[in-house]
Length: 403
Image (cartoon, rainbow, N blue to C red; front, side, top):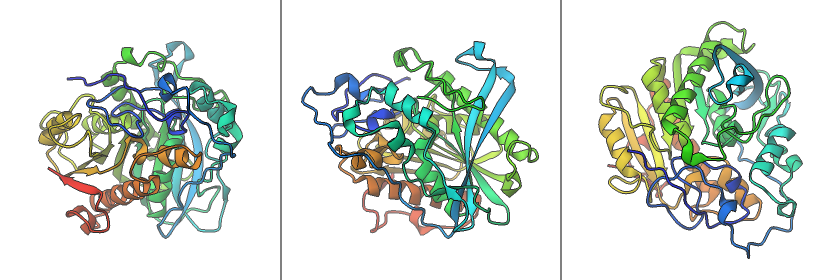
């Protein structure tokens, strides 16, 4: 059963509204009763909205692990299939940001995104100049990742990250750098033509080809397409060093995937199709479709907002079916006061731009996401038990264990 519908966002001219997703919509002070498709906050922005007067300067939180985060951007072409959204463009092209455990003090600060990618976001969301957010300031967000950093020695588990619908891959950068600092190689996958723009190998940054009419999108088909993207990326990263010179860092036997919103659905679909992915995380996304019993018998974490992902209510009904079907180690956590973008960089950048955010502070939302996702992969890919996953923690009272 699909639960997609459009909703209004009550925060106007927000940075988080630049990046929207399916699975739950952005709403600073209200919660949808059912799961919407991607929604543009600008569509229903109040006429009285006031833009900030100061210049935007974004900074993501520093990673907490013992390693620095190195970064490379690679470009891959899947010659085996045409692009599913724009077949006339030729074979499927993907841009992937590789984030890896690095030696502190090496490399140079990595930009958040290219100027063209930043301009694509602002143009797609019709962000006015008065907001203080420009391509230069958005591309210049401090990431705590370093180009050309010297890698740590050894083999490390691989975690693939997939963003929300209409979101460029960079919106999961904070999670990526956190995981890298704790000893993971991370692949941030940009799903070309599905978001506001990914700069390809030829220097072009094509806009979204499917965003203008989200009510017409077959999200089941999009999630399956993303699963094919991810399996192709895994192929390229685990068969020699052709795709990425540092591929020798990857332990090809320990692979996980996490996704936000539609990316969370893609994590489930990828696990169904690709047995190499040993553990998965769905962050606040509708399953497209919910897995059937026997399809996923490996570890899976469901992490979502309390208001619509509690058992038996809102999108929790879909999560009920998925929970019942999961056959391996599993956890279902909800976060009180969070909104859809508490699990990505969105809410924090919105706050730094001077706009309203969810009741849960963006810093807390990001800290909770990074801590629990890292603990989950530590347990399932590294065999490191964490009491954080055993039950409620007094240090994290917002996190509720379901059911």
